Structure formats: C-alpha cells, structure tokens
Length: 464
Image (cartoon, rainbow, N blue to C red; front, side):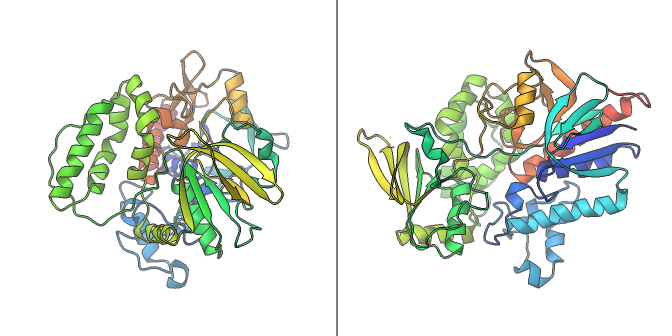
C-alpha cells in the first residue's frame, strides 16, 4: 500500500486530500497531519466573526471544477438560522461558512472512504528523514509517520516584524505579532488608539473586528503607500477584445491601463478587466522574465494587490464609513521606532517623501503586514530542518520555496525531488497567485492527478 502524507490540514492540504481520494486507486492511504485543533479550516476560514466576508462570490468558490455550484448548493441548503443570508451566485458569504463547507466535505469523505484510506493525525511535524525508504516524518511527543510521498501544505506564516531601532519593543505587552491570535484585539479599552501595520485585507479584517466589538477609539492603519483594497462592483463585462496578454512589466501595465480605460468608456468598470486576466495569471507570471518579476514586486505589487484582492461591497461600506467619521485614519510612511511612554507607545514613522519624522500615540500595535515569506527569519522547526539539510531552498524571488510546475520541491543544488512536494502559498514564487480558492483548487487538482500517476507507476509493495 502506498502512503501519502500531507503536512497541514488547512484549505490547501484538505482540498488536496479530497482530490487524491477521487483520483488515487483504492490501496492508496492518506495521512493528513494538522497541528491545530480543527481540520479543514485553516486560519482564513476558522474565524468565528460573521463579518469576515469572502472576497470571491459564492458561484466561484466550489472545491471541485466539475461541480462548479457545489459551494453555492451547500450554502443554499443550510438552515436559515445558521446561514443568516440569502444565497445567490453573487453572494459574498462569511468565511466561517466556507470553512464549515470544507470541513463537511472532509467529514463526508471520511464516512465514505473510511479511516483506513484517510487517517487524521493531530500533531506538529518537526523533522523529515528522506534517507530511508519510506520517508520518516518526526512529530512532537516522539511520534513518527512513514510515507512514500509527502506534501507540504503549511499555509501562511505570521507577519514579520519590521526592523526598528529598538527591537526589544516586540517583546512588550503593547505589540501583537499575529493578527489572527486570540489576544490580538482582546483586552483593549474601547476608547484606546490602535495602530495596524499594513493596509491590506488583513487590516480590513482587523478593523471590522474592532468595530464589531464596539471599539470607539482611533484606528490608525500605516503602510508605505497607504493603499486600501478596492471594492467589488457589480459592473457588466466589457466587450471581448481577445488581444494577447503581454508578459513584460511595462507592456502589461500599459495593456491593463488601456483596457480599463476602454471598459470604463463603454459603461463597464476596470474590475472585469482584472478578472479576465485571472485564468491566465500563472501563465503570464511564468512567462515573465525574472528581472521583470523582480521589478513587479518592487514597484507594482501593492497596486496589483489592491485591485486584484478586493473587498465585498458590504465590507467596503463599513470601511468607507469609518474613514468618513475620522475613526479610521490611513497613514502613509514607514515605522522607524516605537518608544514606550507609560501606558502609551509613541510610534515614530517617516511619512512618504518627507524627511522629518511624524509621531502618533497608541495603546497597541498589531502587525497586519501580510504573511511572512523570508525563510531566513521563519523559525518553523520543519522548515529550518529542511533548509539546514539542503532538502529545499527558497525560490529566487524569496516568496516561498522553490518548486517545479508540478509542485515538486527543489533542493539546494536545484535537483528535483521525486518524493517531496508543496502546495498553496508556499509555492507563490513559481505560481504567484496562490492564495485565492479558485487558484488553489486548480493547483491541488493538478497535483492530485500527477501524484496519482506516480502511485500507479510504482511497483506493488515498493517506494519511490
């Protein structure tokens, strides 16, 4: 019997498990390993706040490409008391409901396949020995799991702290390194001033959480460019032009500006222009020369992010209202230092294109700057072990780990592993758009088909 171990049971790992059970022959056994208490949800979909909304409409959130309305159908059949909304193709549902949907798929599959095909293991993988056949995964509490193939589905890491003059501040009670932690916004005086580092979707979630718990004090959001995500808009698609997508930064920028202007002139909006690129984003990224990809990350990434990863209208309305009232204040600049002064923190930052520092006083600083991706600083034991042994390497753009188009991990010398793979955000350097559900669905389906081919090619009773 061939065994495939999947490290991480958030959305990426759970979805890969579901697809593997569909594609792999029955003797194949899956071991799904998760450190947290719940399987199938992951950080993004484990939130209990009903105001944390998906930023993709329900019609595009199915876990299966051949059942495109699966999530919408599931949502429609939820009891009204639990669902609390009228479901339709354009519905932006609470993220917790999508987490419940994925968990229900996992539970259904366990009932259908039995635990002899899918084993759930709660634990933390801290090491991997690839010298033996099969692979040996070391877990906490002196446990091991053996597998013929292993897949890293480790999701996103918490934001990295910004370099400052006094890094000791990060050990004080005023700082929260993880915006998803239970203590991120707990224990705050409702009138306290708060600083959120970053202005992306994580910051939007933090603002909504603060508003939901009745926070009345000032909320500062600071980033280098001060760009908030744009809103989704129900605008008609522009007339199809079918002009080829450019694959250099300058040409692609000109193309998107031209097409957006054309769409707006025709009575549509720029949003469908970005959405039309979505099925081809990975192809454009992989065809783009490496120097252009670096220029994109250095200069254009913030603009892409706010136009590509947008807010649902009901969320955008609340953010606009908070800004109009003066409670939410978007600051543009870069933090230089934090100085604790009694019960407050003086935040010294340099406004964009200014020489003199500005200061704001807050009671708490929450890092919402986006997932950490600097593998020189990530302290995850498994990642540190794999990097130290040269089993994996960071990708050239340092967005994650280096993988092939089939998600096989590359080692320090660039050799392609035949037994170790990765899915989800950790593969962002190769695939770029690997955070949204439709993107991860396509990736996990493709990897499931590839691994199934490897399993079928194995001689009975042998390992890769």
